[in-house]
Image 1 (cartoon, rainbow, N blue to C red):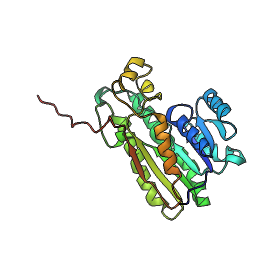
Image 2 (cartoon, one colour):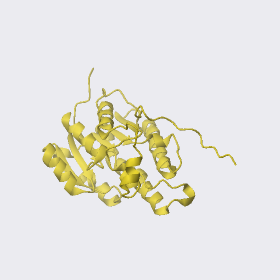
Image 3 (cartoon, helix red, strand yellow):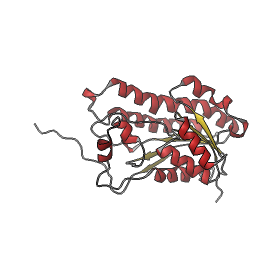
Image 4 (cartoon, rainbow, N blue to C red):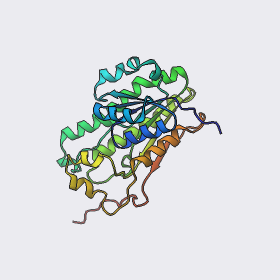
Length: 254
């Protein structure tokens, strides 16, 4: 079996959690990685640990101009991005739609949809021109399985799923692949702490009594997808911990 040789990857949200784990897995496999995130100190520490294969790059995917300038700004050794992992994103709040904060909704849309679109728009044309490349979006099972309080977060991940399918149709014949990896419950990242705005007890309660997946589990899935032979496109990969499954339909009995 012929596998895609390691090249250059760009991982957003690379400073912590799943993004950091993906960066580590790719470097261990021989990739050069542009590790992009907002927190430069964490990126610098990661690069110091992993060595010259990591290029720390301070980037806010909410900054349209900065993302658009990215392809031309990268140094020559990292300029031809073969793998884009759109990992940056977040959830905010678990309130029902009628009590949700509009700022939370708009922040999720900016990160989970607009930021992902900006990065894809900036780097995809170069992949098509070189007739090689792979875009991997990090989605969520929440894009398919609604739950109370998951309204806009789930909707944003449903967008990511549908975008992946639309891109797959567009990219036929270009040599460029596209995948959405859709995890279920993952502990060991800042996801729930951000969602509950620093409420440690509430964040930890989400995982109490169950064995969740770890960021490394998602990184292994991303690496497997990225290292399939060039003629193989894994369109959708969904994974959950054994302790998680779809919930019941909501029913109110008045």
